[in-house]
Length: 293
Ligand SMILES: C[S@@+](CC[C@H](N)C(=O)[O-])C[C@H]1O[C@@H](n2cnc3c(N)ncnc32)[C@H](O)[C@@H]1O
Image (tube, rainbow, N blue to C red; front, side):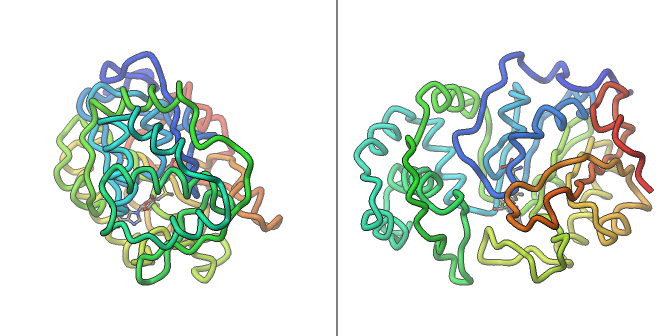
C-alpha cells in the first residue's frame, strides 16, 4: 500500500513557499516531511496550518487547510482571492514604531478582511522575530522588531496565491479535519509542541493554551482516523510525554532538528519526532536518523 513516498499522484510538481515566518514553522524541514509522505491518493489535510510550509512544499492538487487562528485564515483567504490588493495595501504601511503600535492595537473586528490580512503580514514582518503571540484576551502582544526588510516578495506571494486558490481554508479546531478525513487522505499534524523544557516553557499562539489534555485529544482523534484508513504524520518534540502518548499505537522516528525559534542554547540541538501510522519510505531522510529508543 505504501509507495515510494514523497510526491504522490495527488501532488503537482512545482512547490511554492510561504510568505509568512511562523513560530515552529517547518520551512527548513518541509522537504524532509514531504519525503516522509505516504503515497496517498485522496485529499491533503493540514489542521495546524501556521505558515503552511509543508503545504507549499507539497503543492497538492486538493487540500483542506485549517487553523484555530482566524486572523491567519483570513490572511491566506485574502492572498488567494486578491494578492495584488494585499500587496498594494502593504506598500502603504510605514515601518515605524508608531505605526507598528497602531497596527498591534487595532481590533480585527474593526477591519475589513483585506485590512486583517495586511495586518497579519505587516505584524509578521515587523514584530520581534515575527512571533504571533497573543494574551489571554487574544490581543497581539509581541514588541516591535525594528527590521529593515520588505514585507513581501512579489513572486513568492503570487506563487502562494495560486496554490492557495485551489485549497479550502477554514477556521477550525484540529478535530474537525481528523474526524471528516476519508480513507486515502493524508493528514499532516504540527501542533504547538510539547515544550522540551516543561509546560512552563509554552508559547501561546491562540488565547487558549494547547496543553496536555489537547495532546491526548489529538492522539485519540488520530486513533479514530487511523481506524478509517487515513494516513497520518505528526511532528512533535522528542520528550517522554510524546513517546508515551503515541508509542503504543504509532511508529516513532527521530528527526534531527535545530529549534531555531528557541534562543536558549541548551535546547538548540533538541530533536523532533515524526509519528506515523505507516512505515516511513526507505528514501525518507528521517529513516536514516538514529532509531527511536
Ligand atoms: C507549530 S504551529 C504550525 C506551524 C506550521 N507547520 C508551519 O510550518 O508554519 C501550530 C499551529 O497550531 C495552531 N493551533 C493551536 N491550537 C489549535 C487547535 N486547537 N486547533 C487547530 N489549530 C490550532 C496555532 O494557531 C499554530 O498556527
